[in-house]
Image 1 (cartoon, rainbow over the protein chains, first blue to last red):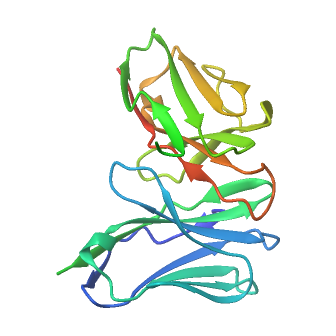
Image 2 (cartoon, helix red, strand yellow):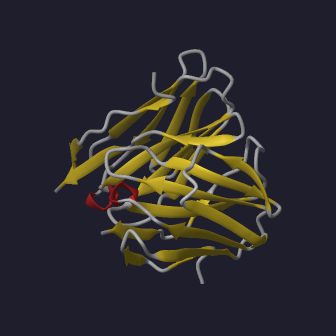
Length: 109
Length: 115
């Protein structure tokens, strides 16, 4: 079983729609969770962190965490073509930051 | 100037060459990391340094040799690489290693091609 699992996509959504990105993790003891955005040919850029169950909102981005289900998601409201990128889920496990393979998001006009 | 700077941005090397990747962070962080990113694979943690001391070697082949002379600089020395080592090598830093709320900040990466 992969430690951090994401659907590789691509996830295609029209401009203005809500994009929903999902991630599951295997280590029940994980305490901190991060979403990174990576444009093609660029380095990952931190966009959200979440540490407790529930929702955390920052502008158009909402991170959701459910530790019982070992599930973390990222919602992007009013998606824009500039949001087109690969979104990496990262989980802090045993002093390491473990990444998923990423989900490629395509927002079309 | 960006928080984490890597040089060179691109590197092509033969299998018998020796080269080094450099990383410098200007964030005052105490932990630095090397990650490898290959196509279709998740980011793979290679090495972790905390206050210039190596705290993690994630089963990386000896043809990769890290060096951390101080908390702001990190090197990855390369020798006798294989074509499958071609990848994007990312340096990252965080406030502390092993602290569960820490966030990692990445450099722009070095795109390495081994021919």
